[in-house]
Image 1 (cartoon, helix red, strand yellow):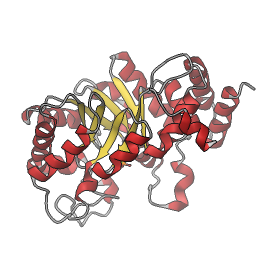
Image 2 (image 1 turned 180 degrees about the vertical axis):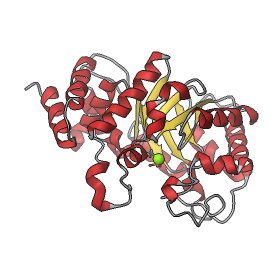
Image 3 (image 1 turned 90 degrees about the horizontal axis):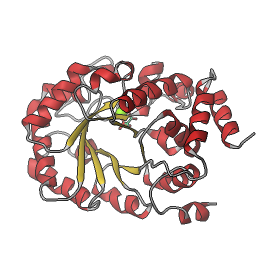
Amino acid sequence: ERKAALSASTGPGQTSDGHKVPLLANIGGPADVPAAVEMGAEGIGLFRTEFLFLDDSKQAPTEEAQVQAYRKVLEAFPEGRVVVRVLDAGADKPLDFLTPGDEPNPALGVRGLRSLLEHPEVLQSQLRALARAAAGLPVYLEVMAPMVADRTDARAFADACREAGLSAKFGAMVEIPSAALRARSILKEVEFLSLGTNDLAQYTFAADRQVGAVARLQDPWQPALLDLIALSAEAAGATGKSCGVCGEAAADPVLACVLTGLGVTSLSMGAASIPYVRATLAKYTLAQCQRAAAAARATDTADEARAAANQVLSGE
Ligand code: PEP
Ligand code: MG
């Protein structure tokens, strides 16, 4: 089965009736690029830049060191799309130079975009490094902010991108329920959305992503999570903007079909999952994906949602 999936791993991600859903890779740095290329990734949908700095989290990396790292990734996808996330420090990814060490609830504290807005010089240096790395390359650079809560956050990030002279598209991650509920407001400030379903599940269900005892609530098939994804995708669709998924949800081949049915426009995942998602998506029409999505949302539990989608797709 693995062989069959791999042999179907060429060409763009699409449904059987040709609805395109670009399949992109999640990476933590240049070392992850060869696997992404080998698995046929059409680009990078999530470059977790904080991973470049976890080794030496005492100080901010130099702008020059960042330019080198970003350029290596951008050069690997000529003509392709590369979505870079600015530093998402805090909670499960602490960086000493950005993360306050004395918060009672780090996941609810100054993390992600919040810490960058408190350290504008770090954000500006990263955005300038990205602009320099992309200069002269034919790549479609997109830059996004983690942990955007509302329109005020989105505007602050957009202003920072403009101040740095970045000519990339800029977007917001939807990881907090408030952002999904008011995706339309956020889209007044940015050009695309990307759903971080790991954190979106964590904050929707008040279930720490690092605590195994609450894993049931982190199940990406939870209908409440599907509802928030649908809201975000509909808001983006209404304004002609894109709305991808870059959380673990995108790596489940059947869920990938459901996400497509909900209106998600691209899927980004660990490279190893790309062939399986590509092969599964290619078996169904967009209309089947939409019916599977509607059936999943009509249920009340993650298990029921999974079963309902599978039933629709297997034609029972
Ligand atoms: C997410 O939260 O789903 C996400 C993609 O970001 P990270 O896992 O790096 O927090
Ligand atoms: Mg996240």
